[in-house]
Amino acid sequence: MLDIAEELDRWVGQGRDFAVATVVAVGGSAPRLPGAALAVDADGTAIGSVSGGCVEGAVYELCQQALKDGESVLERFGYSDEDAFAVGLTCGGVIDILVTPVRAADAVRPVLASALSAAARGEAAAVARIVTGPAELAGRALLVRPDGSYEGGFGAHPELDRTIAAEAGAFLDAGRTGTLEIGEQGSRCGAPLTVLVESSVPPPRMIVFGAIDFASALVRVGRFLGYRVTVCDARPVFATRARFPEADEIVVEWPHTYLERTAVDSRTVLCVLTHDAKFDVPLLRLALRLPVAYVGAMGSRRTHLDRNARLRATGVSELELARLRSPIGLDLGARTPEETALSIAAEIVAARRGGSGVPLTGAHTPIHHDPANATHPPTGRIGSVA
Image (tube, rainbow, N blue to C red; front, side):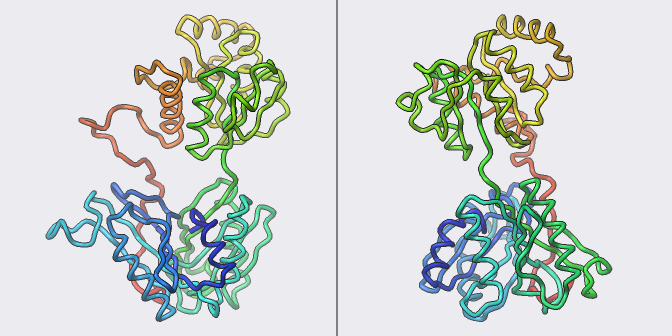
């Protein structure tokens, strides 16, 4: 749901009633991950997607029905062996969809409105909803903020609110969306629960060091992938807005000095395109000791060997060197800046998702690498207890 927060926030501001269908769990070759959503308003306008087209029509009808009867529903869609044209995922996957009405009189609306507003502003927030559990908890939600404070809740169950707030806070810290299971004893409500937690966090950072033509192409690809992109170079004549109009930030500073003072996290990717030892060595010495997602450096194999020798001489360990992606990018046979940017982006995505980087044709590797999300709660009305 939070993946379409900007548009849904406008709907809330306009006073529209709507129902939102959210992917809760996936299995096999399902096209969308948990948190992907489709919403339908009272006039029949639809936004978003839950399956890339496979089951959109059926989910659209579920949303319209939820708006009429005011009930949340959990539905499973999968491949039909009897009829390839039946409603289902012909790619062979399975998805569970939670449909929630969000009408003016619904108790969940104020909480979801706050969550949508925060996500639309780019603020970190997590929202938790019951997937399976007692009927009394249906149609409620809890919004958790980074400082641990929360809004909303699940009725007369303050201990359950605190339990879910703590769990959702951990999801938020990791920027993760998925489900969690709470046993009967832990739920404090006499029944086990399955809870969907959706996290919205600010976009991850991509820092590109070296204001060269390859960097310009990489900035465009990085923005396309949803990164907040910074270009850093010590040379003011090259690090200009005119050369990098699509960068979110341009910094004129020695690369290692900037990296020492800027904020990075476990989602940050660092792309070193400076191709100059006086910049590369002090920068990489620091970068390889930071808890970032990716560190890549451009250069020939000869440059790579020379750079590694220089890094070892400064005290960089073999374990730290093993983190370095160099020469940067996957082997696509790239020549142009745009092709090179694509090869770098492909390596970043493969590292992030656990991909092998080999062609899917003839391979026996999974297409989607998200085994932690392949859980399947039972379908039916939310009031039923598994």
